[in-house]
Image (cartoon, rainbow, N blue to C red):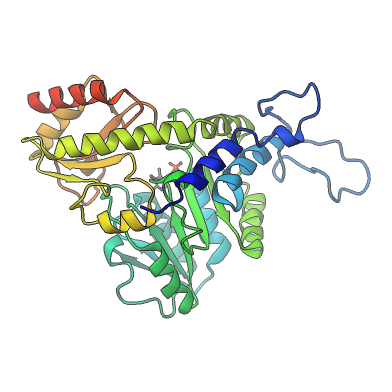
Length: 372
Ligand SMILES: *Cc1c(COP(=O)(O)O)cnc(C)c1O
């Protein structure tokens, strides 16, 4: 796996002390929440906070932390989809062609179908493992999601970025399933990252948030302009909750991924499980790429049982699983993705491993599988 562990440990440590340099004696150590539509603004408004749709000190705190994690400029959005929409609307124009994953987050495809196509954007879908096939001639933007949700297929971010750039295309990566601790798309050559902080970064399933990061000043100015003008702004309280979550992300993410690796191996050996998808498992179709571009196999596992009924019994019969959509929370959760129409087997379950001590979690999962 990529040797960014030591760097990320350094970054995780700095993250907890980022505000230190700004504090005056007597200031609160945690990030304050500022609720403000108006700022005191006599005379020339240049250089000062002007209005609540443009600026907020709590967003600044969150963006400072997110930007530090990715070594880039970060702009916060009120959901993952708001961030993804911002990446598209900041870049594409009528007549442009974009490539999106056919097997990624469903709502990204809806956005492309219902809002980009009618504006004259040409949308091509490719399966994640086949993203590079057909090349990128005439393409304006390649949008990747790796590992893809829910199938957990991978594509080569560095290789695709190189080929896309050579053809004049920009690369955007939805990094939701990995977080910056698991995968660093900007370091691999991507131009923008868009991600849902609703998932592991906030981590407690109590808030929606998203962000876009990038290192190109002009591109990020367009993303910021989109937020200011479209009004897709985060609430200060939600920004604060997300910032609080980020401070424990490294701890939660390491536990979740370590547990997921163990659970995936045990699931693979369970007689009721037909197929396990986990990029950290040797033999998984994504394993080699996982080793070259991810620091861990992640906390999501795809497992297929032999029927819808068995999968439902496994999910609802397990005392240590929340039957819920979404993922990345402290509590393990699972759902059958076919219930939303995803192109997966009826018995396919997306399992999000939480922070429960793994021996107890496994006992609960195994007991429910045995009975399913
Ligand atoms: C959840 C998710 C999103 C959307 O995030 P919201 O906060 O629900 O808008 C986007 N991409 C992926 C891969 C996701 O899992």
